[in-house]
Length: 203
Image (cartoon, rainbow, N blue to C red):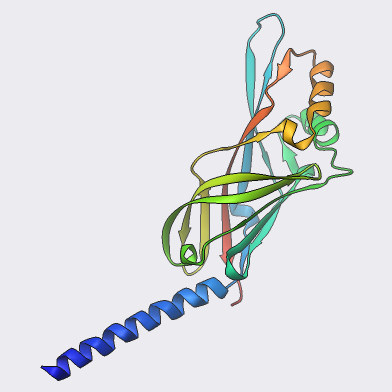
């Protein structure tokens, strides 16, 4: 009887050690963003004059990069010149008038993922994060679901992040765009959603 108890105890200890070792390896691994399987979308809404209604347009960025490093430190870089609205002149206006990509070519999102959320499985998270845009850094909160396997981490937003244009000194650019397009106004709070995948790199 004592032998069986001892054996069971040893098996339990070994299992816990193995699980801890696996979690440790996951936390130490680096993960690289897979551009082909990642996207960041945002919706812009313009309101026409004389009660002519409004129009919302879905847009996205085609060039992203990023990593999840040691201890869960994560960073995503957004190439603002890669904005895609499916209308050439609209792309150019966003690049030059709103984003001013000649001076601020990149936006970044940084956060820290708890190490236990890097273990295999599905994790629902609410993460304090930082968005740097137009040379200004502001705190945001990311609501997301992460699915972790031995090969990759897939992350999907469960709630949009509302980026307030006024927080990033974009008021002047929006005013120019409103005047240029003869609009009543452009909604300054922009919902942003994301679906990104990180592939496992070296430990």
